Length: 116
Length: 116
Image (tube, rainbow over all chains, first blue to last red; front, side):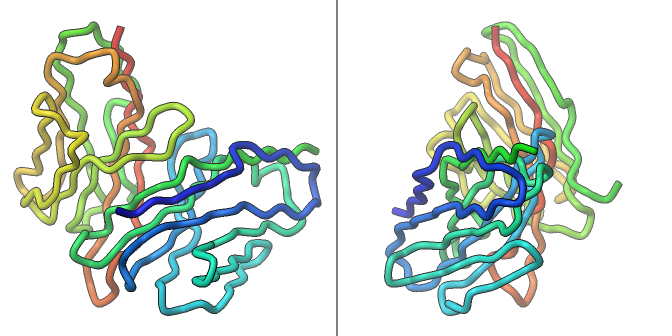
């Protein structure tokens, strides 16, 4: 069975600091997909990134970057020069093969607070 | 607004009453998902549809829960004989199937259910 662990329940930083959110996953499948979603106070989950298990290249999108390491089953998310608007709950999620549809298994989330 | 729409946003009911929630997915999306999220936790998968066919149900979906998507467009989730443990945010999401697999999900803002 698949499992996603986000060990950091809450993180608090001061604006402009860099912050890394950790994600460790478990799966028996060789083909799987990893996601990060952001949930602001409004409640709607916002997609940030999707990565398949065969693509271990790190990705950068503006102030966001993701480090995928299959050897440690981790998919960590870094925000550079954090801003107050980054304050939200961030979820890492795992989806196994297409036969499961796009059913996601979520971690418990990390509450990020960026203080001015 | 072309996003996923859920109605109502909030529902307060007494234990033992039946409640029904509605979800309107993004119009060209043929997959629709229901998730449940309790405070401080990540969303948990309940069920999903491909067009009008309900393809998978979680064991979390007891026989008091029923979901339909009669014409492959909007969906309803009904909870009969509500219990206090049903209090949660009920999230709907949609995705499209195409060449890419395990596509990202687009989430609605959810229906917050409180059972008194």
